[in-house]
Amino acid sequence: MAKGDPGVTSRGRRAAPRSKRTAAAGEPELVQLLTPTGERIDSAIGPDGTEYRVDFTDEEYRGLYRDLVLVRKLDAEATALQRQGELGLWASLLGQEAAQVGSGRALRTQDMAFPTYREHGVLYCRGIDPIMPLGLFRGVDQGGWDPNEFKFNMYTIVIGAQTLHATGYAMGVAMDGKTGTDDGEAVIAYFGDGATSQGDVNEAFVWASVFNAPLVFFCQNNQYAISEPLERQTRVPLYQRAGGFGFPGVRVDGNDVLASYAVTRHALDNARLGQGPSLIEAYTYRMGAHTTSDDPTRYRIASEVEAWQAKDPIARMKAFLTNQQIADADFFASVDEQARTESVHLRERVLAMPNPEPVSMFDHVYPTGSPELDEQRAQFSKYMESFEGSAH
Image 1 (spheres, rainbow, N blue to C red):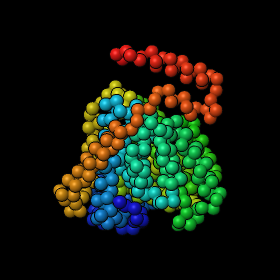
Image 2: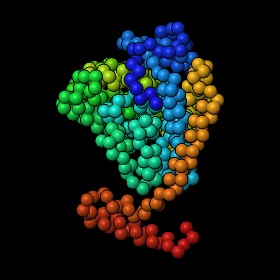
Image 3: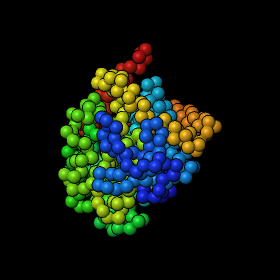
Image 4: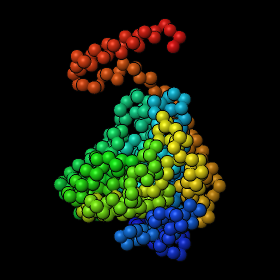
C-alpha cells in the first residue's frame, strides 16, 4: 500500500509529457500530479523550485485506491452510526481522503504523527484498528491505542493544541540525536485551516523554527473553520505564512493522493536530515458537515459543493487506474465488496460495545476524588434515579 520508498525525485510512470502544472483561471497554484479527470502529470514544481515526482508499482497504485475507498466507507458507517444514536458525535473526513492517505502512507515506520480528531485516514494507514476512535466518540473509553506502539498520538479535541505537543516531541527527537541521517526520525502535526488562527499553532511555528525541530506542519485546508470561510481566516494563502516564521511552505492539491504523498515524503525526509520544519497546505474540501452537530447548508451553497465533487479524490484515482489499464471492473468490484464487509463488521463491533453508565463520567477526573466532585456525582445520581420506572 505505497509503503515503500518511491522517491519524489524519481521519474513517474505512465505520465503525461509535461513537467510543470499551470493553474487554470481562478484556480490556486499548487503541486498536482493527478488532475481531476485522472490525467497523470510527470512532475510538478514547488514554490522553492523543488521538483516532485512519484514512481509506484501498479500494485501500489491499486493499494492507494483501496485505502481511499475503505477509509471513506468506514467513515460513512461511523456517520450513520451517529445518526442512529450509537455515537455521541462524529467528525467526518469526507472529501479529505487523499490528503490523509497520501500523507499517511508517506510516513516511515519511525515517524511520529500528532492528529486532530478527524485523521481517521492517517490512523488507518498507521495500522490502528478503526474501532478505536469509535469507542472514544461512543463514550466507552478515551481512545485507547498506544501512541508509542503505532507512532500516532491520541486524538486532540482542543483546536491546535497538538501542534505544541508535536513541537515539543520533535525538539526531543533532535536533542536525542535522532536526526541527520536517512533513517532519522521526523514528526508530523495535523490541523485545519481554522486552527491557523489559534495562538497555539503560531507559537508552535515560532518554537519549531527557532529550535530547528524535525517537524512537518500539515494543514488540511478544507475551506471552512466550522462555519467560517477561508477568507475570514487569512488575507494570504496559508502556506505563505511559513515564510514569516523562517521555514518553507508549499501548497499541494489535497484531493490528489499522489501529490499529497510526494510533498509529504519530501518534507519528512528534509526534517529527518536536520533541515528543520516546513508547512504543507493541503488544499481540499470538506464535503460533509464539520461534525454531526453541524448544518453546513446554513453557510454554503449547493453549487459550491457540486464544484468540489467534480474534484473527488476517489473518482480521479479510479479514472487514472482505468485509463492506464492498471485496474479493471473486477478489481473495483472486489474493493467495494471489501469496503462493505469491513463496514458491516465495524458496525457489529460498535453495537456490541457496552453502553457506558452516565455516572462513570466522574470516575477519572481526579485520581483521589474531591468533595466538590462527590457532591456533583450525588446530585447527578439522584437526577438519573428520578427517571426510573418512568416512560422516558
